[in-house]
Image (tube, rainbow, N blue to C red; front, side, top):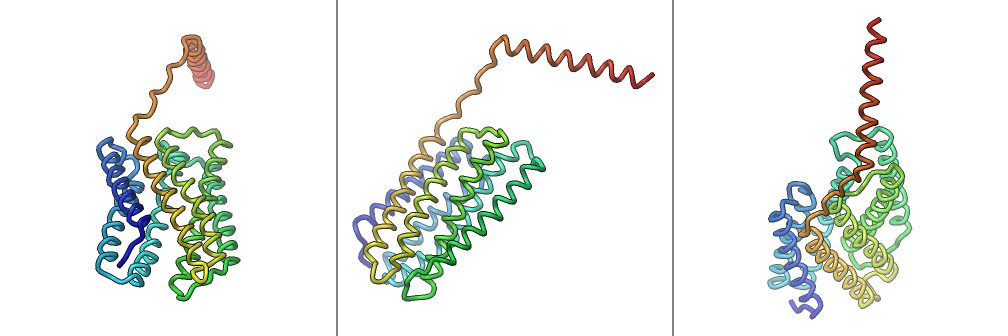
Length: 260
């Protein structure tokens, strides 16, 4: 099967960057903290290898069918990565705050409703049912993930929960990739596969290029160590120490009063 120059470049760049990213995750010990993100990266590597074999030994029709079918698994893994990010942000000590958990569930429900509505309004033109399903599912997951990422940032800022460096970098890359996929999804649903095949191809190239840039960003930022926490100034440390002693004294008085 003949492949375009960009398709070859995208395959090589994606494969090498994902391979390098997997190495960084294991070498720097990030895989223990982000097992679902690591699974997503390893899945990308396996998918690219299988796609290359199919591309070399199968027809264009078979390759496209396989490409569209395997993208469903990628979309599921991306949602798993989002969940992992949410756990790091909203459940850093192993327990969800009740109010945060309710709001987070509400965010998921609202995002599902909006993404479903926008997907229902989209009417992609495609010659086969499985291509139509792919266009719809890809657009749905992109809209859903974009909404969830933006909503998570707003919610964490509202409740005052800090983001650790590596969690933020993974979320930034995933959010950027999802937003670009929403834009390309709008174009692809508008033009369909025929007669706007050229437009569809260009929008797919934009999505692939965005992932390559995000993968490179992940390699650089996840290899670097998180900045060490800044030490508290001596004055603030003394204030905290004084407050702690005052609380201990108050507790001692309360216990003595309850024993009377």
